[in-house]
Length: 305
Image (cartoon, rainbow, N blue to C red; front, side, top):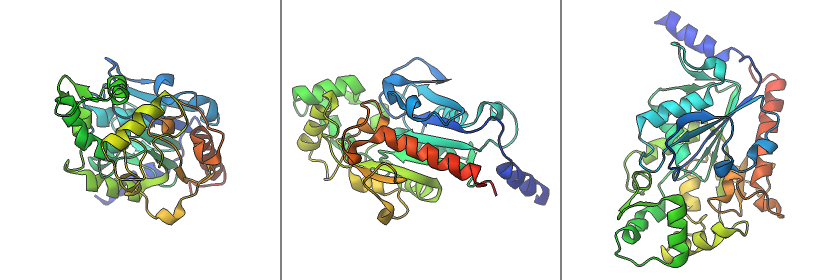
């Protein structure tokens, strides 16, 4: 047993070949038939690759996250595969993620946390940075109430209906499997929040349903108001739920050069799909750039030791 433990920690400390890897794990709402790793996913993440040029390789998870929730074991394995640099995939040893920045959005945070909890992969604390975005660590208060719209108990407003159709909140008259697992009473969420407090080293939480003015703003403001979400919120997740995964909220700053960024953004803005706003508190794409620059500099300065 001593030799096995020694080998494990040796693998955790070994440098990766191929430079810095960047991985992106999306949240709920994707209705793809794919179950794969792509080199880009602009429909979800916008032009984020243009802001992360220091990444020598990039990988984007792409899977059905409407009919599959965050407890789905196949999603856990795919998240680990996405986060592993290509030279570390498909071999029989411990799946240790090294020299990597991992960005997880919304339900994607829970998927990776569950994968770590199950031991499907592990993060090298010296060489991997996990950055969480718009995380529903205590669930989404919106998911608690959306079922009433899905089953017809409450009438849709045109704004909420348009967004619900776009993001696949409902499947027929039922809440999607993904959103069902985001309800605040769903078991296991507190454990996932604890994992984030231990392992996450950067975090973005939005506190404005309006965010950067786009087509998403109208629907997310309507959801925040009609579903009476606890304020402040990003239109889907309250700040208190997102902050449950932050080790110390005093670390927060309001500009994108802070690793812990409290931003005037909505749930969609955080992905970079709506670009940067003009104000410092509305620049999610620049935050991705800053996180990658920070970790690149740390590795170059000898973070492996």
